[in-house]
Length: 196
Image (tube, rainbow, N blue to C red; front, side, top):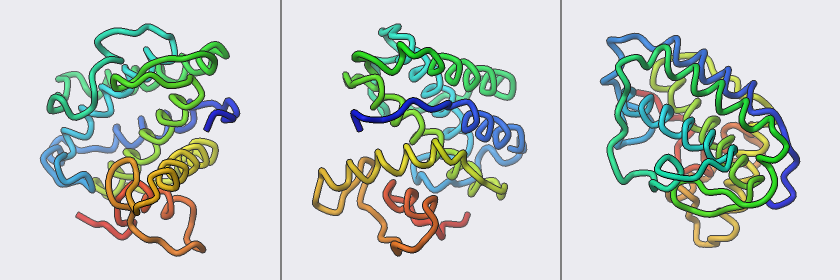
């Protein structure tokens, strides 16, 4: 992933913001493809990761970039409908700075090259966008550049592990001829056929 070419995270952030706007208040307790997360938890996780990867791009290292995921249950802010689109915009803006893609940074308590952090950010937005769309019955068409980065990141991680596991758990086998989104979802440890 060290050769990742810079791309704009804005289109994928906008896709996720649109999905957020389509979540009904009554749906916050509904299930998602992440067994440990209800829809409200997933939204809280998205809010936290958007801030963390914004700060990683800015090299503003501290509590937001040092905390490993899963150390605390995601908290959904009361103003999530306003806050989430704003932090998603901030995330995209931060990665438009060419300096974000160079040198080292940190996310989730892990030091990594800027370009790899961008690929991880794209992966988080693509996969959790899929989670949110599936959980709330919305149409989903991720940004092509973000999807390519997400797929490349997950595929490299699975190949490096070499034991049928990916970053988030066992890889779900998906046919080679399946759409890239389905293959990416499978690499993330999710079944592309999941329904609530």
